[in-house]
Amino acid sequence: MRFKLGRATVPGPRYSAEWLVVGLGNPGEQYARNRHNVGFWVVNELAKRAGTQLRAAGSTMHIGVGGLAACRVALVRPKTYVNLSGKAVSQALQWTGCDLPHTIVVYDELDLPAGALRIRAGGGHGGHNGLKSIAQAVGLDFVRVRIGIGRPLDGGEPSWDPEVVAGWVLSNPRDADRDLLEEAARLAADAVETIIGEGVDAAANRFTRK
Image 1 (cartoon, rainbow, N blue to C red):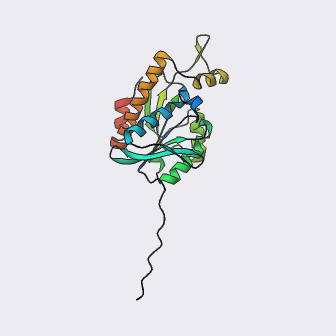
Image 2: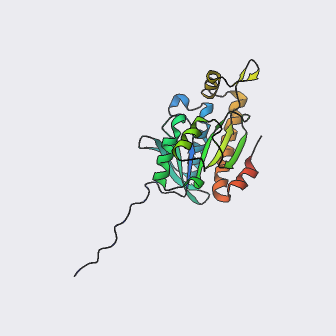
Image 3: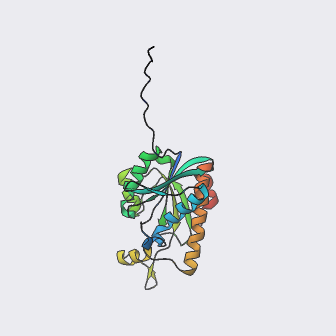
């Protein structure tokens, strides 16, 4: 008896998901509590809620897949430094099968007060090195959740000096600032779930904080 040969099966994405959430930050324990790593804090919180653990995958990311807002969601912490985040996001899009409109990037924002939240779809890179890298790799048509870390002061005035700014973003917040950022990270995780379940506008209306 002859058997009819079927069409070859094309393998799907290895971490198939409906949504991709990427938190920006620098890898390594020495950076874990830095202001620049609040995106990682949010992804870690979401991983707990989704019941997944992020594991190393390839050379660019830690990834875990779980359920949030009744959807299958891939959570990513890049293994690259912030200014090379585009490499991780590009690979994560390929490995999850997600598109940019279903990608959420969570990151720190110098020009928002500590603890403030802003949510929007699309936009520019605003001078953020991580977003510049993502823009070059895949574009900017993703959803962003910005967490304010405040701009450092030099002589009582806001500073744009690269050395002062670098020292600020790569330092650990203390006392009131730390409490503000930890609370903002929890609210940002709530916002991500709302984006996935109800849409960007609903999340922006509910969680935008000055």
